Image (cartoon, rainbow over all chains, first blue to last red; front, side, top):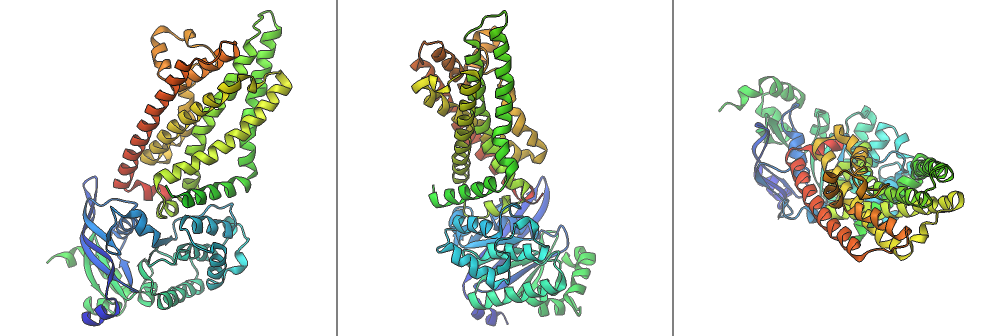
Length: 256
Length: 264
């Protein structure tokens, strides 16, 4: 199994080693280590307070770790932040874009920041890919949640990232749009070989999208493996049941 | 410094300001109101029993130049707050943008806005009160540049404080310049201040600008020593503000405040 994974994802795009983060004496991330291979989608799972968001913020360079190391494309994040961010991107349900700008204007600003060549052509092709070409001249603040999510995804794909960090990309979407977004992410990953780190509270998302899962509880890794391996490991029939079990019995499961 | 990225940020502010009527009006509304009120007052003082012929020029000159400082500070801090209000801060800071590029863009956009505002004020003051800003002659450019630099220093500092202490400290964006106003001799000479406050006043670059402006308007010309003081102090304060911002930025990253501010 691990051998197969190695051949599918030979070179790690992201290596996290002994990552630890404390906020005023409270440990949010407690010495976690994991890797993301090339073209792999890794899900970071856990209940509220498990350390997912903090980990993601550290991976984005927004928060500095107390100790440990993050290497992206073989470079130390702390020392090569700008070079790394040039090849990464991020989309979150919890961020916004300037509401009074039109969709194409917001995308053009970020295309310029990422130094995208033939930016307008790229924007048009992404809007078509995400089936929101008709929203090109709409004001961003007037979009629905589903439309806004897809505009954020377009922003996240502008620079053809080798590593994409997604923070609950389907939050607040109706099942139809959520399904479209999941399929789209899978398609992009297949066609472009993008590695992704994906956080979500939606277990269906994770089962459908992620190749491998890192299950966090109180800042520690409780288990890693494919969705099927994780459900088997916890002797449950679905990831949702695993999630509930971890949320309720996580402290006991952490005991050696 | 990557000019492409600076250009991207300038493009973002250009879209932002050209798409928003309130933002465009804000560039003119308060400065024009200030000019009208101060202009009327000084006109009354001049035509009343007080006979202060140079008064109107000192006051209107002080008002217009104060606006340069205030707006330079505002342009820096409000540009940052625009991203906070739009929950766009995380998107900007996870893009490959360096801090110096972020500030360079805010300085460029701020300078452009100030030039437009000052041009409008200059035309109005010449039309209604016969005060010609260009009568400052070649001194206008160095005085203007010094106020810009001081505004940037205060702007960098207030931005750092908002980053460190969150949106609760947003009032600083508007309040801090007005803490400086009474001390920096914008509308009256340093000699008017109490003796113990005068050294404090002289340690502020803007004081030398306003004193210099009054000297020029009184026909004495701009003293090179005054200009040297203004530039030297500005250099010290801009360096100190940049260092302090860097420190506050690192503290914000260490405490996870950058991400928190970006999603509030």
